[in-house]
Image (cartoon, rainbow, N blue to C red; front, side, top):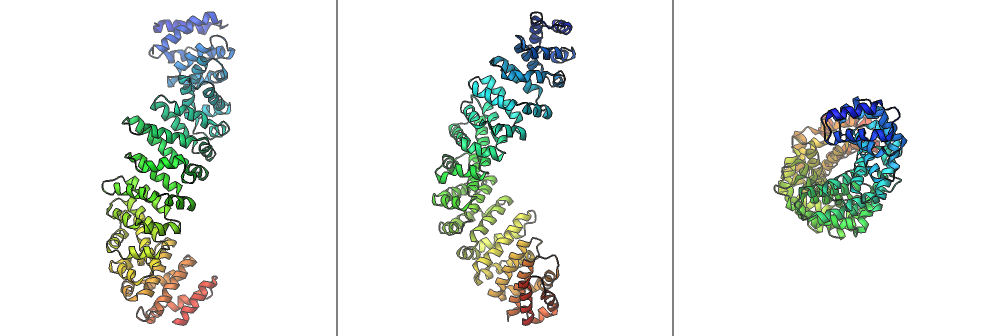
Length: 558
């Protein structure tokens, strides 16, 4: 036991010791250490104020028999944030760092704890530590003493504090740190240790170099193995570990090379485990599984292979689980995966044959804008270049009514835009008068007219092309909405706008040409009455020969 009076006496004795004789210092250090270990109030602050910190640094620099005890005193002191700056000023960090090369495990433990606590949340000191080569030593210590849990823990905590720094990541890129972290992940005694390792992996995995190293060293497989071992339990800490690990696997898949390695042509262990997540009862694993499939589906060959291997029914079953009162994130991720899978033309045909569009229409009743947005985008991808799919969806009155409703979504501009784009896509890819009539019946032509004056070039172009096709197929369904919206003056403005994109002007001319050719549509007189000839004449000497030629042709018609 040590009261504060005896601690004060010991501090005084150390402060007046000029030769720092170890035999004389030891009993005083014992007293100071006892005061710290017994958590005496303000003991650390009293030690810092006493002026003995430079003396402690001198003892450490001598590397004598008291070094281990002094390192422990400093480690216990540095629990108190208020004394850390004094420790730095006294040169304790510089004096401690060489002791990381000690072969004494207690010395390593005390030194690691002291440095870690002093430099905690101090970016400058942490940078200095990295520059001094401490990263390589931390990894070496874990290699040399993999079963010394307290020592491993200190090294892991230190790496966790440094892993966000670019210079630390650069140092680790040459050290094959993945092997060390995988070993410790597999032997982690508790969730706390797991979480520190997962946090390190997450920070380091932001580096493209380390991301690929991790994939080549088996990190995703180790994470997947850990998730398998934790499934089926009810410990909230285990749930948390599974969440972190599954998110980490998804992030590692963002690298193209690491993603391909995990995919392994559809036979990789990680890919197989991810498929099982889609069928799990754990919502977090379902979410990570859907996001992972969306990541795998970033190139056509993977998409085709996954479709062959039967991934789509698993995604559809997952979506159907969450239709009512389900998880919005899971629905969003599942639709992202389907959308990516539908990008290759061969997959669109196959998915159509498998009834995918029919099954995902069950999500039409959702009230969640993120799901609405992703559903519309998925349906638009499904009809891209697919006449049969566009015909089927374009003739569905329930679907069209819902799309029109979403075209007017006031609180979500993304939903509004996607709904309008899907309407245009149904007409553009079906090129069918029945679809035009069905869209017009639900009030869709007015939505396309609004879209034609959009500030987004792609949307504007898609709408103008859809209106031109609709006018050519069934002018009777289109002419009244066009007149009511007074579209012709708007088209004239587009032609005369110097900032308007060439492709938008060309699509505008296409619509005007269609209208001029329709005997039952808007008459040539109407085109002439808005002085369209003048706008067309100005375009006949446009720098785009294609645009100039089209303008000249329409002028001849008029």
